[in-house]
Image (cartoon, rainbow, N blue to C red; front, side, top):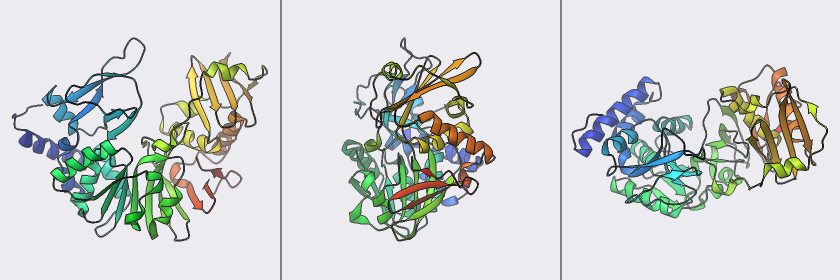
Length: 399
């Protein structure tokens, strides 16, 4: 990257380049959002972040290298204006960006989401001028800034569960002249002081649609959020609220994932070998390869979400060639191992985890492998179910 050494000049050029690239990719169909991308200085919201090193460490963990203007001005500025998610925090530990250190492994807990996805989320939620908007997950504040630039600050409320993160975001937002309503709050409960909202957009994922969000949305209003779970299956859904604590909407296509709301974090389950030791010796052959839900494909991404809806408390890990399913809530477990070209499963406990997943996979095949957009999520008092017209006998509960 060629730089002049003048930060604002360099940043303006990179913003224009980013906006052109996103427009060429069809992300910025709305001229207003393109102007917002060209105007908002993303570098002001990411004074430091981590990028993965080219090689893992001796234990196979990803090495996350800190990137700041002081460490490497060119790398920092180029990454800030790339269409990339920038990790800003691991395991809830706030870095000291004045003297940052590399991290080995860890779970990301805060980030600046890639600009194309941020704009796509606002566009998919059909946010228009005059709408009152609740954003869940302020993070660095960059997404909030884009909304303020496009829609004005007066109708934007953004909440963040991490007070230090919100303090940093507030400084950046106010420093850039944006004045949305900001609050430290758990997205699971929305934000009653500013309700009701025309649109609610979540930049984190939930295991189920929080009832408080339905209650805080005006009749006819919309909620855009990502559903996830302990199998790390994801699906985005755009819900229309009908005013009776009920809503429905179609799943959206694509392979989008967000960090889970912290209250929805999976429980620790210990050593998989301990769970496997308690399973019966008798195994059976399964007609479905577990790679159907573990492969790095768009269909597997979708199937993992459907499987997760059938076993909402299950977690999955692979040790060697053996796939372990563990349910810390019911005490159920299953293992799948490749034997002479086939997969054999052993399972025990009150919930036959893989058997339930098999039923989903078989029904999915029989229905012609329907895409996410053909599924509808129904949310009502006391329940949430996924339904599909070709799968009448398989109403899937919430993830």
